Amino acid sequence: MLKRVPLIGAIYPDRVLHDDVYWIAEPLPAYHRGRVAILGDAAHAMTPHLGQGACQAIEDALVLAEHVRGDAGVPAALAAYESERRPRTASMQKAANILGKLGSWSNPVAVGGRQLIMRVGWERGAFKSVEADVRYGTRWRNAGSND
Image (cartoon, rainbow, N blue to C red; front, side, top):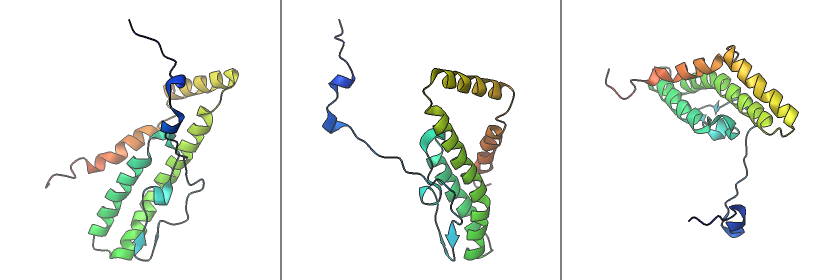
């Protein structure tokens, strides 16, 4: 027979890892200057509520590589990278912040309302942008091939 142990009481406080979450509340005005660019959390750190932080960094790297690989020259390539990535990452930052705030509600009436809005919104297609987000990544489907 298994012995039941209260989980919280079994934890040694000195063995608990605690890391604060930092994010950029307002999107940065630029992701590059001259021949230097930033990407990932340096450019658009976000709360973890969408699970998109690392995904956005990978997309940054792919888009940056596409633009630098072209013939436009480094400053123009970095400007193109920024122009493409800033709107997408800003919308992800905003959505993650909103979901974080909604997820922190504890009042039972507010939680019930949130659950209803999310369910009805999803069923009625209010979250169509999710489909566009999924399609965004398909441009690299064959990135590893020699086609």
